[in-house]
Image 1 (cartoon, rainbow, N blue to C red):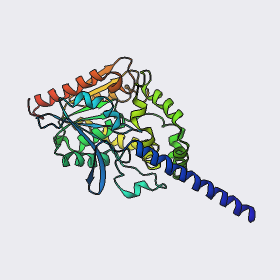
Image 2: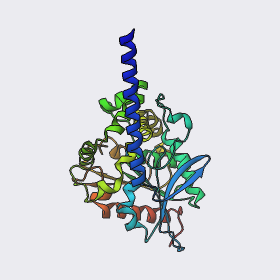
Image 3: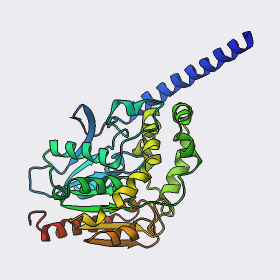
Image 4: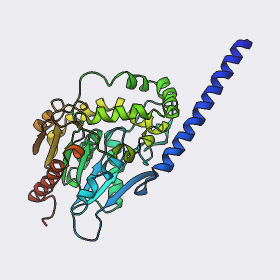
Length: 333
C-alpha cells in the first residue's frame, strides 16, 4: 500500500512538473510571437486576422488559408508583401492554431478526439472575412488549408470569386498518417503526449521537420525564426492540429463527391516533388473533378511552392482574378 502511494505521488509530481514547464514554454512562445494582426470576435470565437493592402484603393480581395502545424505567419514571411500592392490580402489563423481559438469549447478538452471539420473552419473564417467587408474573395488554401478553401466554396459557391488550391489536400489518400498521429488520435495519447512535447521544446526535431516539409527545396533563410514554431507546440494547438489531421479523411471523402458542382474558376498549383501531399493523389484527381480548373505543375518543386517558386504562385493568383472577372464573378479593373 505504501509503495503504491509513493508511486502515485511520484507520478502526480512528475505530471505537475511537466505541466509547469509546459506553461513556461507556452508563455515564452506567446511573448516572442504575439498576434501580428487583430483578434476578431466571431460568435464568441476570437479569430486572428492579418489584413494588408487596404489602402483605400479598389483592389480584389484575396484570402489566404495556411496548412497544418502552421499559422498565418507562413504568409507574412514573404508572400503577403509581394501581393499587397495589388490585392487587399487577408490571412487568417485556422481554428486552434496561431492565435485563433477553437470553434467550440469542448474541442479544447484533453480527453476528446473530436475536431473542427473543414466546413466548420470555413464557416467561422468566412464570417471573420465578412466582418471586415470581404464577401466575395479569391480564396487560396495551402495544404490542409486547401481542404478548408474547397469547403468554403462548397458552402458558399456564389460568394467565392475563384479558388487557388496550392499543394492542397483534396481527395482521399491510402494508408494512415504515421505512428505519432495514431497515438495522438486516441483519448489517452491525445491527453498525455502534448504536455511532454511542449515541455521538451524539441526545436532540433522541428528543424528536421521543416526540412522534410520543404524538401527538395531549401528552407528560406530566416523562415524558422519567423514562423514561430513554439506556437504550434502549445498543448492546445498541438492537440488541435493532430485532431484535425486524424479526423480529416472522412470529411474529404464526402467533400470530393460534390466538387463537380463548384461553378467558380479554380487554379491548382502543385509541385511534382511534393511527398507530403502527393500531386497524383490530390491535384491530378481534383483537376478532373472540377468543371473549370487549370492545373499548373511545378517540376521538381516540393510542398512549399509559395516559398520555392513564388512567381508561379502569384501568376496563378493573377489568373484566378482574370478568370473570375471574365466569368462575371469579379468586377473588371
